[in-house]
Image (tube, rainbow, N blue to C red; front, side, top):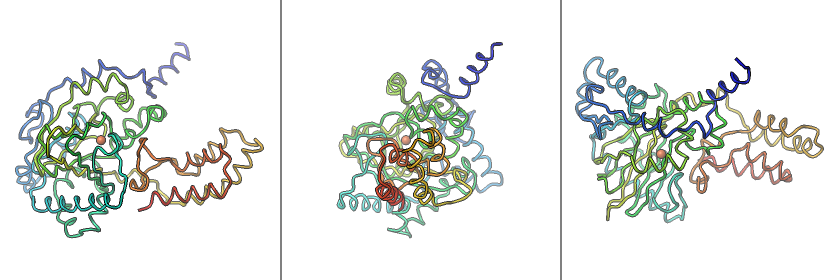
Length: 398
Ligand SMILES: [Fe+2]
């Protein structure tokens, strides 16, 4: 075998490019149906593909030995190897607690509107909806008692532990799509789902496979969501598609998604959980009066963090004059300067404070490394870089 042929094969196996995307493969993958035989704890199957669980029945099962393990095992199998999505009917049996939190969310929205805060959504037009970033902390501080009743919920904890194991951490964003609000474009979610095709292509294939295991995506319905109100559009089984982070960003796949998605109505108190790699998009709200409110939950693995914490901004401040000098007199190659920045400054824009650092006009805010590179390229004075760095740090803090 020619060495370059083997090399090419290894490259194709370990890195995706736009050429890796095949609509035919996607059609075959998503043509599968599931039945109650596949998911015996489910009470029904939605659209021939999505297991629906009656949480009252699950709560009875939870009282039995082995009940907890059986439920978690079935959910993992559905989320990982099956359609990638489950619906938990009446996940919130304490409707009063849910309604109470709805009122608090409305207060947060009204407050932020009054304060003229400009919120945006990664995948929808600006102003099409109301969004409260970091609703977890805001609700907690506004109404600790309401928070306690809401997050005492057993189903959120159970599905989070099923997908991520213990020590998970929750974040929440309120999303209200108003009548007339248009659908989002199809996407995958955090982490790789928030990167451009060019960025996505730089990560090896096994990182594409890893990304969805670091987060669980969920939505709690805070009102009834009939189809005309635009509950989320899904394409079951797409979480298993290797080059999916590139596929969702191609016109051909977007068109196919828009013509073939599955949409399930929800009732107040229902929750949907899905793999962040599932192709999905919020639907358009064609109702006259339903302000479609969902609490979007992103639950993170304990493992998406470094072992040590450090002040990377302080490191960047110390390195800037040194690298600037090397840059000016060309005593270090650009590539070498890039490697020093990669070894010191923060390369990732998250976690951040999305109120101060909204993703309007792009998928992710600028990272510390990107700022560092820009400052060197444009030869900023040190004081300007220090100030921009401080601003970057401020915008990420709550
Ligand atoms: Fe999403």
